[in-house]
Length: 196
Image (cartoon, rainbow, N blue to C red; front, top):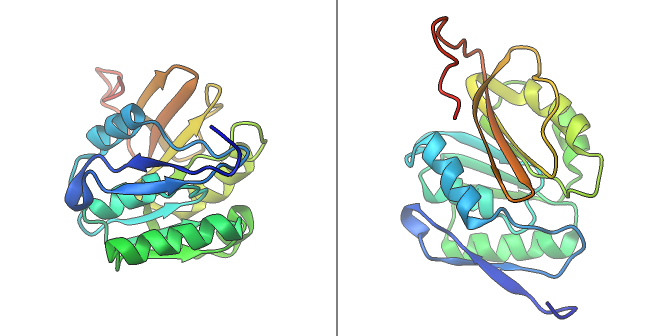
């Protein structure tokens, strides 16, 4: 991709299926691949009506807009890059995405001051070449309501489960590891639960 040239990702489900989101040429910006997004929303179910979601490292907004497209009642997109935040706000306006709020903010600082148990689903997909995943996870787990989920996407296998969470689903697509952990879920004693 040539410097300064934008490309786009396409939403894969819900009311905005096939709508596009611009992707700027920024270091570390790597939208969740279509195949991974499709897998994730198969895990979660296609109808997220009433869910409250946080996309902590929004970038292109692909994960957050996918959730809103599937009926989420509230989706907060955090993005500290002002240019990317402007682009997210333009996408919100173009899609008339009333449930979406864009915050130009540092994800770690924003999550540190957020009320606990506010969200049903938190997406964590920081740039792979940073060490943000562990501190972000520590803050995000406090924001997940009982029965809710935290989704992690990284370039390496995730570490230890946070206290109070259990594995729900996991997968790998090329170099991308993606896992879904659920708060307060206990797998049946006679199986390994619903992990794949």
